[in-house]
Length: 132
Length: 132
DNA sequence: CCTCAATATGATAATCGTTCTCGGATTGAA
DNA sequence: TTCAATCCGAGAACGATTATCATATTGAGG
Image (cartoon, rainbow over all chains, first blue to last red; front, top):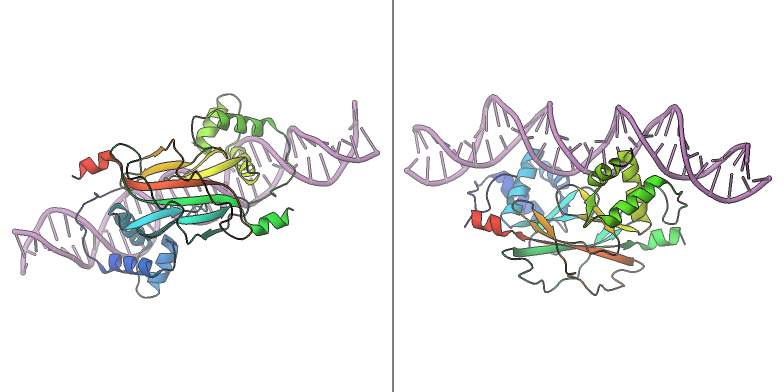
C-alpha cells in the first residue's frame, strides 16, 4: 500500500467519477464492475480505478467487503456490509438490517473503529433442497 | 465448486491430517501455511490441501474467514471469526469476544444459518500515531 | 480376500483479481 | 507561468486458487 491516511489528494475527474459511480450503485460493487461502468462514458484505466478505490478506503470514504468469491467489493463507509453466504454454492445476498447496531468503540487499545462487515454462513434454500 | 453437501467422502490420511492440523492451530490458518506444516511430516500436494479444505467447508466442518489480504483463512466452524482490520496498513488481529452472540436463525426464507464472521474496520494505533 | 467403478492424489498449467512498472500527462501551490 | 509532486494508462508481473489429467487409492459388493 502507498500514501498516507491524511495525504494530500489531487482532484482528477477519474477519482470523482469513481466516487460518483459508487454512490449511485445499488449495493457493493467490484473494481471490475466499476471499471466497466465508467468506461461506457470515458476511457479510464483499470489500474486507475484500483488506485482510486485504495485511496478512498485509506481516507475512510469507502469500505471493502468480502463475500468469499475472491473479489473485493466497495461501498460508501456509512453503508452496511452484511451478507448471507451459502457454503455450498457460494451464492450471496446483502442483508438490509444491520446485525451489529452497537459496535463497541474500544475493542483494542488505540484502535479507532470506523465500520464493520458481517458475513453469515449457512446453506441457501436451493442447496438444502438439492441434497434433502 | 464440485461435490455435494452430503456427498460420500473417502477417508484418506491427507484429509485426516488437514483436519487435525487445523484443529491444533491456535487460530485461523491459510491453505499455504497448512501445506507447509503438513509437509514437514509427509509429502502432500498443495492442490490436495485446497480440495480437502473445500470439502470440509461444504460439509460444515470448517468455515472460511477473510481479512482483506487476499488469502482465505480456515478454522473449525464452531470457532469465532471476528477480526480488527486496519484500513491503512492492512494489519489485522483476531478478537477473543464474539460480537454477535445471538444471531437470528431466520434471516432469509429457507436459509439455514451455521456461523458467521465479523470484520471490524478502522485504524490501528500505529497508523494513527504516524499521521497525527 | 478380490474386483472394479468411483473418487482422490499430485505435479503442473491455467486462471484471474490485483498490484507494479514506467514513460508521459496533470495538478496546484508559489 | 513554472515545476516538482502526483497521477494516469497500458501492459507486465504477481500470487492465491482452480483446473487438468494420468495414476493411485478407497471401499462396497461378491
